[in-house]
Image (cartoon, rainbow, N blue to C red; front, top):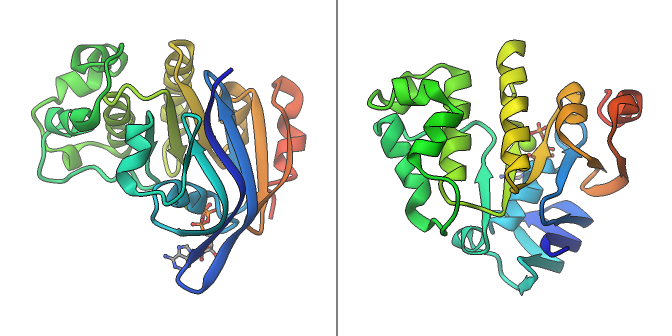
Length: 232
Ligand SMILES: Nc1ncnc2c1ncn2[C@@H]1O[C@H](COP(=O)(O)OP(=O)(O)OP(=O)(O)O)[C@@H](O)[C@H]1O
Ligand SMILES: [Mg+2]
């Protein structure tokens, strides 16, 4: 299977702060991978390095099988990688539908378009013409996922998409992630909710201090093993 994203022994920095230490990670076509670890271990920095927002000073990154020497923010999208950033980042003065269209700016051909997104999230259609920030937290997260899908990516990086959301919304999002993956899009799910991880992911990579320290398969009985990597 084709490798969609690979970090090989990556060192990454914010200014002089050395955050990722020989971090390695691989996601192949159609895979459902969870990236887990305690607060501050560097999970978001993995995303930021892929986007060129943290400086890569050692190791290598491949996107869609191509080596990317100096990642830049637009390159991920060009290689079929969409990001749902931590904190959602909905554009305040655009409507729901305009926020969705924003995601299509670098769209490739594929299954996802506005009508398909509305089938997935009927609430977004009901609220199509309201400002993005007038939505509840859960609806904003749905919008952020919809916006990422509009690019028809082969891989979506989801950075703590259920942070701060009510359990019923977390369940709904879990179902959505499974539908998206069933449709063929690979997922890298950064999550603190291990129950959700067992429902969505098939494989996990655990981080500590900026490096991958463990990995394994995820199944219904994985909860205890997963919790060991996130308990404080
Ligand atoms: N812009 C920045 N400049 C300097 N240090 C930063 C910056 N952003 C994050 N850090 C530091 O980098 C380390 C890793 O942060 P990162 O956000 O990647 O962690 P995380 O695993 O995503 O945590 P969380 O689960 O809380 O989102 C932390 O020690 C953090 O304080
Ligand atoms: Mg983070």
